[in-house]
Amino acid sequence: MLKAKLLKPTDHAGLRRFGVSIGLALPLIFMALLPWLFNYSTPLWPVLIPLWLLPLAMLTPGLLYYPYRLWMAVFGVVGIINTYLILSLVFVLLITPMGLLLRLLGKLQYQKSRSVSEHSNWQNSVAPAAKNLEEPF
Image 1 (cartoon, rainbow, N blue to C red):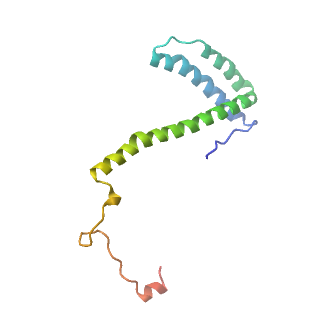
Image 2 (cartoon, rainbow, N blue to C red; image 1 turned 180 degrees about the vertical axis):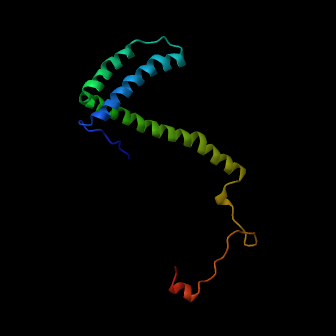
Image 3 (cartoon, helix red, strand yellow; image 1 turned 90 degrees about the vertical axis):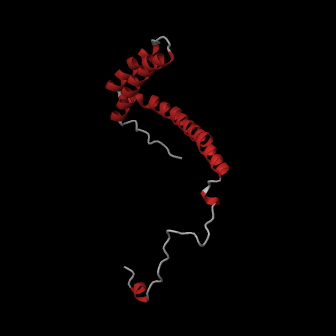
């Protein structure tokens, strides 16, 4: 299983990027995107996230190390679940019906056998000469 490379507590630039990106993305998602998509009223609690994260990211990014670790742990699990869920849905909704349809129509390639008299694009190789075997390249 792939594991994300985590930031070190001394990587202030990475922790600063984390704080700024989460501090800007979460309010945009919860105050703009979701209310617009689902016709909800705009909540005000997401304003508290950048008020807390942005000053920490700019002044003392080292304090964001444990929130960063918690974020990565939670959403690492969410990412694994999403991966298996999406791959399972693709298999069940796309690959399986295609296989059943091809089997029903008799179009499966591995079930077709070619007769000897049928034309083939394969070219038989010529037996190598003794000189070619001495100096192959």
